Length: 48
Image 1 (cartoon, one colour):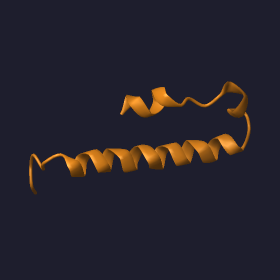
Image 2 (cartoon, helix red, strand yellow):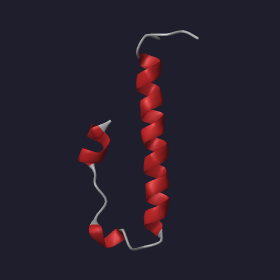
Image 3 (cartoon, one colour):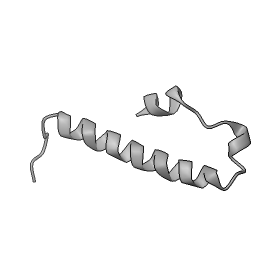
Image 4 (cartoon, one colour):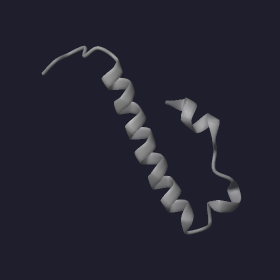
């Protein structure tokens, strides 16, 4: 989970730009997709 943030961190200069919100949303979706990918790869612990 932390690997994604460590690999590439947004530059301070782009935080004030309106495009930063898009990157934030994209990172959120990427993180969620990554978590789902890892969750689907691991065997289900509790099948409900």
